Length: 355
Ligand SMILES: *Cc1c(COP(=O)(O)O)cnc(C)c1O
Image (cartoon, rainbow, N blue to C red; front, side, top):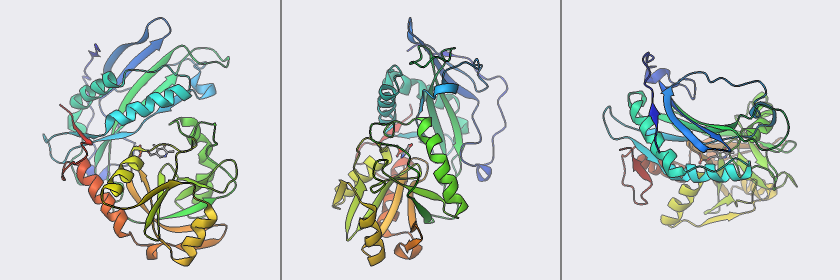
């Protein structure tokens, strides 16, 4: 793919590593590519990071025809090698999101190549302090200029980059989870398995409710019966019950996380039994009350592994593993981050060097 590069002549000052938050600082360049019915995906460019101009009638503002991805680039020393973690999986998933949202597919290999060019251009922005990384946000928006409801003909594909600080400044601290029994995030047949902004819009109210009650995330139940465990916040979720690892099966309303898949592969490789199945909230709360629930954690690109220390279902509060990180959660965090930062062997070939 031919990519036109326009360099930023006014690069910004870098933010010191200890002041980095999540997703508030952006680098000097971005990738942008257009789509229309006549030309397909075309006009791929790397340009200075900055505002884009859209008419108020642009379809994305009205009907949320939009998808996104999230992945990271890692580096432990200046001028050291830059790694991506299974990036081809993100672009495969993004094409599946395209299918669900009636957005035309794109060539994942070509976009990955464009991403590598963008990362190299902004390589000096990749933080190297322990726990830091460069968050990568690819997204596609519908830009037809009219408010009729139909799939757009025109789209923009954009990738922006954001240096991010360590997710857990004080080490892996277990989070408190509120089991949401009123609101749901997604329904079977809906868009739960697509990474689209609409799912997040639907989840804000539950998240807000949990925060008011001093809980940091929501445990979402299924949309039909409000009985089966689906995800925790914007993460997939795992439970260790009587020695067996259980995670909800992908039934259409759950986002197929790449961290989720990697954790399952890693656990099976290490000899653990992992069950992907329906998990009833009663079964989970009984296991938590009786002590059979040994560990629980969420998985996602941002936090990697987020241990769960407490569950609250309508006032029934269960503390898990004395509110401390468990051995399996810690092992998974160490193994995955070791592979991501290039500090451990990569037996599965998950790491990709940006060349
Ligand atoms: C992105 C996302 C995840 C995690 O996926 P990863 O590929 O592991 O980062 C889980 N749930 C939801 C709803 C998500 O949007």
